[in-house]
Length: 242
Ligand code: PGA
Image (cartoon, helix red, strand yellow):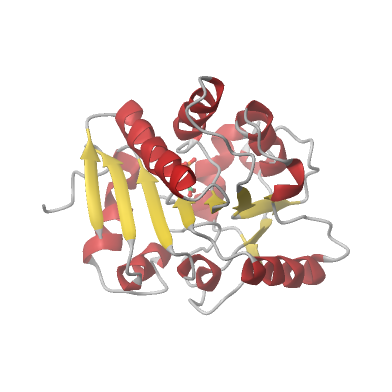
C-alpha cells in the first residue's frame, strides 16, 4: 500500500483531487467508483472547482457509487442520490446517463443488485474512491461480510448507525438496511484510493494496514490488492508505524 500522510483535511482532499484529475486527463472515458459520507466532501469541492476553472472535464467519465440506504427516497437529504447530485453531479459537466447509484426500490432489490453487477462487469472501474468506517467497513460492507460478495442487501452495523446518526435527526431515523457494492466488486477495480481523516479512524487504519486480513475488518482485504493508495491526515495515521 502506498501511504500519503497529510497535515490536514484540506491537504488530503487536494491530493486526492490531483489523483482523480490525473486519471481523467490520462483517460477521459475513465470509470470512477465514488463514495459518500463526510470524508470525500472536500474532494468533490476541489473537483468541482477544477471543472469550473477549466482544468478538467467529466463529460466522458462514467461513475458508479458504492451504496445507498434502503427505506428513504432519492430526494431525502441524507440519501446518497441527493448527496451526489448536490455535492458533485450538479456542479460538473458529467452526463446524467453516465452516473450510476444502486436504486433502493424495495420491491425489486435482488434484480437491482443483479443489474448493478452486470453494469459493473461491462464498465470495469479504473479508479475506486473509498472512505473507511470506524469499524473498518468499506462501502457498507460491515464486519463479517464475506469477501466474495458482489452487490447485496446489507443490515447496517450498530456502530455505523451510531456514526451516521449525526447526519440524521436521531439514531432511530438512521436506516437499518442498505444496498452496497460488495468487496468482490471493489477488488476488481484497477486502482483504489482510500481517504481517512480524524482520530476516530486511527484504529481502523492501523488494522487495515498492519492487522491480519480478515472479514472482521473488511478494509484489511485491501492488503491483497496490487494498487492501493491511502491518503490520511496525521490523526488517522497516529497508530500507523511508518
Ligand atoms: P465518513 O464515513 O466519511 O462519514 O466518516 C466513511 C465511511 O463510513 O465509509
